[in-house]
Image 1 (cartoon, rainbow, N blue to C red):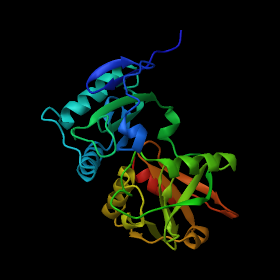
Image 2: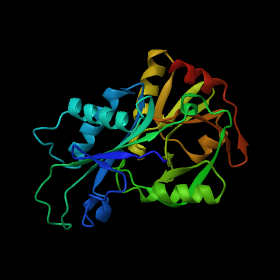
Image 3: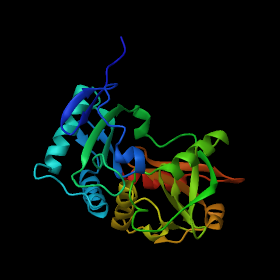
Image 4: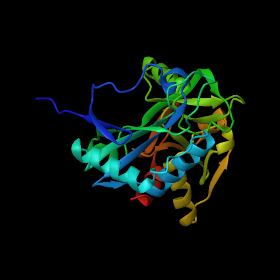
Length: 278
C-alpha cells in the first residue's frame, strides 16, 4: 500500500490530493508570495535562525502582515507535527509557501499570509559531497533583474523553471542564470561560488541572486576560519577560468561542479570547505 502524504494549510492537516486552494489563488494567478525550503534532520530544523530571518524579511518586503497568532515557534511546531505524521522527521525536505488571499490584481483587502507546509522524504546521499561532479552551462534565453525582489525565493519562478527544463533538455545537471548586465546571478536551485588563486568569490546580492541561507552560512563559516571570501561581480569568464566551482543550497549543502562548457574542475578546496560545515 502506498504511503499517504499529508500537508498543512493554515494550521489544518489535509491528505495530499485534497484540494483546498481556490482557482482564484493569487500565487497561481500572479506569483504573489514566496517559499522557504528547509532541511529537517532528526526532528531539528537545520540553519533555523537563518531560515526564520529570511522568512521575516520576505514577509516585510512583500507587504504581508502576520496575524496576531503567528510566531516562529508555532510555525516550527507545525512543521515538526507534519513531518512526524508523514514519517519524514529523520531526514526530510520541508517546503513552506506563503501566499496572499484570493483577489483580483487591485482588490486585495487582507494582507495576512496563507501558509502551506509540505514535507518530502530525503535520501541519505544529501548528507554527502556528490561523487560525480555536476555538469553546468549558462541559460541563454532569459536574464534576472536586480531589484528588491531578486533576493527572495518568489513564487514567480518562471525563469528558473524554464532554465531547469533547458538544462534537462541539454543533458546538464543545472544551469546558471545571468542578470541583465550579463553577470552571473545564481543557478536554478543554488548559489554559485568559485575558487581561483586561493580566493573564493560569490555573486553579491546586488547581482540579483537569491539570498540563500546556505550561502550566508558558508560565508560566515569561511570568515570565522580566516578564509578570504568576496561577494562581488562574477563574469562568465570568471567561471571558465576558475580552479574550482561549487553550488550551494539548504538541502544539499555543497555540490561540486566538474564541468562548465569545455572546462573541467577538481574539488580539492571544495572538499575542505565541505568538511568545515560538518
